[in-house]
View 1 (cartoon, rainbow, N blue to C red):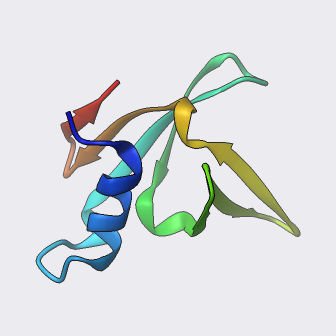
View 2 (view 1 turned 135 degrees about the vertical axis):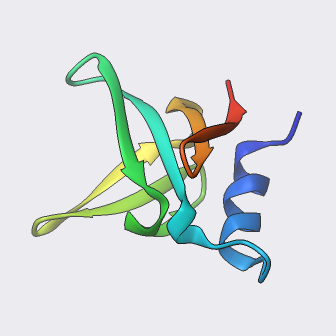
Length: 79
């Protein structure tokens, strides 16, 4: 099984990949449901978190909350 951090970095840095094709599903502990975001909405990867821009503040999502990564609607990684 591929580690999520390795996959996220591959999507970002591998010239054969197109980040626009990817989406990420993570568990939101506030709403208690799975949320979907586009990979391109990730501002940066920092330690054990992905950082998103949400209005005037940053939102930190722990990597362990990521449940799925999809490419063009097809799941390519699942926890």
